[in-house]
Image (tube, rainbow, N blue to C red; front, side, top):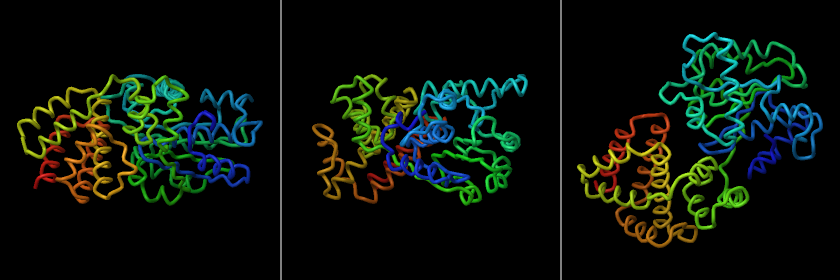
Length: 374
């Protein structure tokens, strides 16, 4: 991947290129961003740029031998560590690792803006507990003990280091603090708050923001066939998350407004039999639709907060949505919105990690009912 393939993120890109030109590449760089931030694509583009033999002013050339290998994720001086479920079975260790790496490369080529959920579905590990095993620390040290083969640099990319087994995380602390010459660590995380403080203290942190609405809309208008009305709706729901926006393009017209309205009315009335039925309906949805409803809920809470604070000039809702928000806001205040948003965000986190959708939704509904109508 090259920087030219990534929308937005201009400030991050310029900072990365500036540091490389000045010869001040951090020995351990943490690309930190919330779910949907393009920190993995930016890390991959940075690797391509560092290995490039004919660097251009603002990007890798894309045509030299190093770039051709980097764009296929087969450069011998780039190493990858990523979470997986235990699918080895009776396979030979070396063969299993080779097949896993091949699958990883195929995933990066197929879904360049994919997230952990997409990766797990791609290799077929939906029902397995994922982690970065304790053995990986030894593999990292072994891989970095050799000199670079072709590039001036050897680069180790660790994706989702928050999933590292504690033994693996502790096992790389020394080499992370003092890597061999011309060796760089790039760590990519969506949950930096869960990383060991000893890892955070050994890295230089680079914050990667979500795309703005304008950047997301521009990307969709250039690379998809979505009309203006559909793009506007997707941009509202995605809230800067490009991967989610692309997923939404592939779904049929959603009924989130109707579902969310029924849900909130049942919460306000404390109609627990209705909420139980809604939890069954929610459980029957596919994971993308489950996530979309919660994302829509967060968006509506945001709109309610804007109305509460008088900032209606930046509101995104119109028509039936606006009427609902005006009515809904009458039973809310800022504290209720803050607590509700936090609970919805936590529910989305647990759904993403394969918790029981029915139990998550029902528990969330009961808690929201207590908040909305105490």
